[in-house]
Length: 91
Image (cartoon, rainbow, N blue to C red; front, side, top):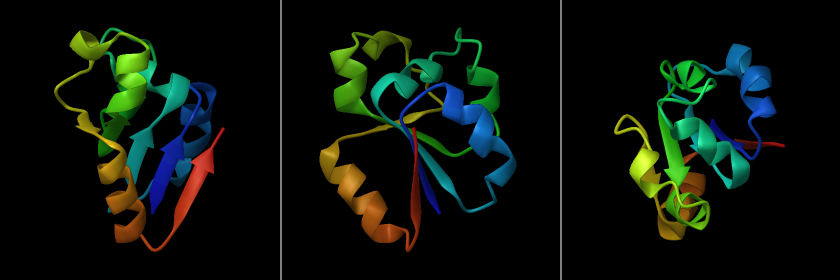
């Protein structure tokens, strides 16, 4: 399953539902959690985490994204949705 997360508060909600083989894509304000100094970053350590590069750039945090998080562009976003038979968007 692809979990598309839009807000920081949604990370706590999805954590118990994340299973092996799932992927997590941070978009909109959730990209702030990709900073290793962010309090929510510890939640991401056990997830396969990707971040939408356009949202990272829009918020000016390109240099703060952890190397453990893979940045994807819009084409990569489309590819992720095509790869996963199910996706869930968390607000």
